[in-house]
Image (cartoon, rainbow, N blue to C red; front, top):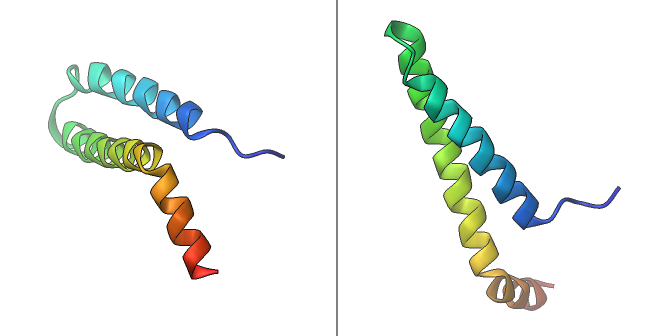
Length: 67
């Protein structure tokens, strides 16, 4: 099975993050805190994927040197 492209992963995370943010606005108390933490984690994943997307060539060069 082929791996999904980084672009597809970014789109998926953006969609999930958008839904979570919308749902988070209606929450209160303990679940609100948990959801805020989950949103923060999703934001970090999104930033990481975007960085990898933007630096693919550099990462490939590093991988060649390491081999």
